[in-house]
Length: 123
Image (cartoon, rainbow, N blue to C red; front, side):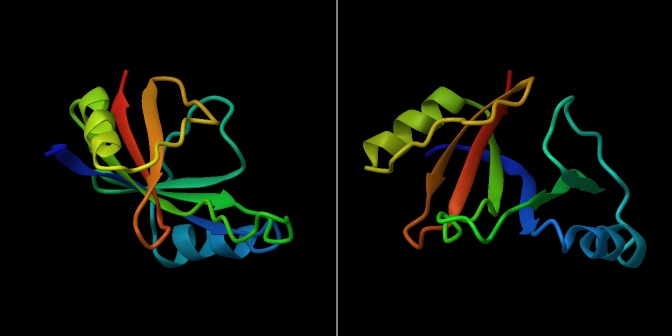
């Protein structure tokens, strides 16, 4: 067993044109408070919902890879190496971290339906 501790964050995506309306929706309508973001993080917005964050990210749906969404759920684990080993043993492909975030170690996998999942642990 991997030992998932909690859902760390959920990421949803919008186009650049949709971003102002999405920020109004999450901040003004739902009343979500902003969450701190690491230094040079991408455009978008982060919000705090209790211990969980909502990450609002930009996604260009006009790119050739538009069917590969950046939407995902992130599971925080106690032992990242053990989680990776267990997933590999189960035949799950591991995708490395193409956009490192200071203070976080992570990798990505896909569930059988093609939904992207981030697995992370603090450094």
